[in-house]
Amino acid sequence: METVGFIGLGNMGMGMAANIQKADYPLVVYDVRQAATQPFVTAGARQAGSPAEVARLSDVVLTSLPGPREVEAVALGADGVLAGIREGGIYVDLSTSRPTLIRQIEPQFRAKGAHVLDAPVSGGKSGAASRNLAVMVGGEQEIFERIKPLLDAFGDKVFYAGAIGAGSVCKLVHNMIGHGVRQAIAEGLTLGVKAGVEAEALWQCVRRGALGRMSSLHDGMPRTVFRGTFEPPSFLLSLARKDISLATELGREFDVPMPVANLAEQLCIESLNRGWGDLDSSITFLLQEEAAGVEVRAPQVDVERAARFISTHPDAE
Ligand code: NAD
View 1 (tube, rainbow, N blue to C red):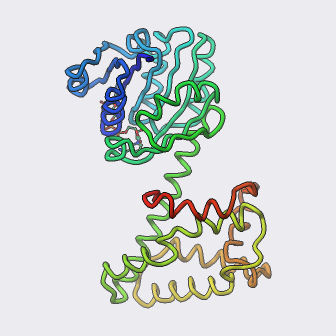
View 2 (cartoon, rainbow, N blue to C red):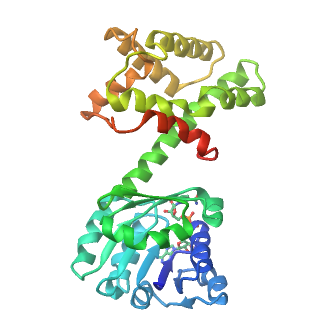
View 3 (cartoon, protein in one colour):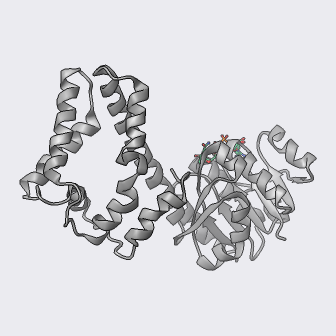
């Protein structure tokens, strides 16, 4: 089994490293907070004095650090991973970091005959502890396949995302969508409570309705946007506009600021003025594609399979 070096044993790192140790990989650990390495050393891991030493002692080096500043320092700084990496060694950054940074780091390792992957994770501290983690991996596919068993030791949803940096792009997109959705939920729940409904009832409504099944994610997107077709409509744009306008009207009645909802309404109105009222409401997506100068198509995504995902992965959300 490969010797695994782990640098950064914080909220995420401690759970992931514990699962790697549980899977019987020999472990070398380092953290600026020495106390963080203690439980691993007690369980048999070797303590290193610097990232370079971790790299000298390991076949695969993993880092789980706060952000780009720390990743750059640990990977490239004096006594960093690059200084100690062996020819054929593999460096994997698990941090949520800047795609451009890992794309700058990778050639410097390649020049020493070593490999780099970016593999940010999603699932939180409890997911890291319980091996309930998505791991999104960018870099050479062959290196990904080679260390997949190691990634499987701490993640249950490991997937290959593309060339170096692709994992980090995926992670930033994932979190950015999450923040947008959270703001929309915040607007909806404040509106609902102010308009006289108990928070628990609103929560039930969100969970029991189409939103709770995440139907737009599981079959809506593959059926419409990914194919570039918005017919036959399953929900008319003209009806969506009516709904969002009733909500923003209620927001004005109860003095609830709703920036995301009002923006969504404006985009509905603009789409209606394009003559798209009788098409599926997901057609508002085309305005964003036009603004961004790019199309989002994936006709190969199987609608039936995407729709079934929710019933086979009840905890997927
Ligand atoms: P954390 O701050 O708890 O852990 C970071 C660890 O890195 C700490 O133990 C710290 O001492 C160590 N460290 C910092 N600088 C160092 C250096 N120069 N050398 C060696 N060790 C150093 O952070 P976290 O919550 O574990 O997050 C780690 C990464 O995972 C971040 O990029 C974060 O965005 C990402 N992430 C976090 C979560 C979450 O829910 N916490 C979920 C998904 C992804």
